[in-house]
Length: 82
Image 1 (cartoon, rainbow, N blue to C red):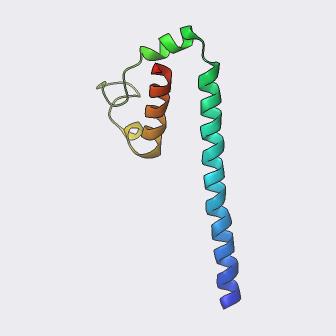
Image 2: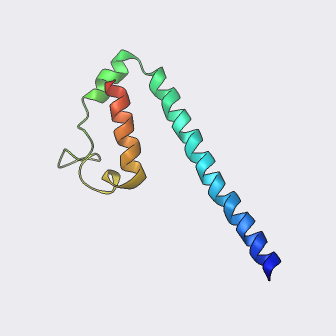
């Protein structure tokens, strides 16, 4: 049984590691895309309401205002404003 537990643990560690790697790749892709925005693009995106402040629309209260999605959207909105 210890061998089976060791194999299961190794598989779990690899699985969790793949999530971390995936998050890093996504973060790098987002940073790259932000650098590719023109000033016109930024101005258009600045017209969107801050996450959770509008009562309607996809950026209003709801699932996007929670968890990792909220964190990502807020980081994007901050980067566009910078």
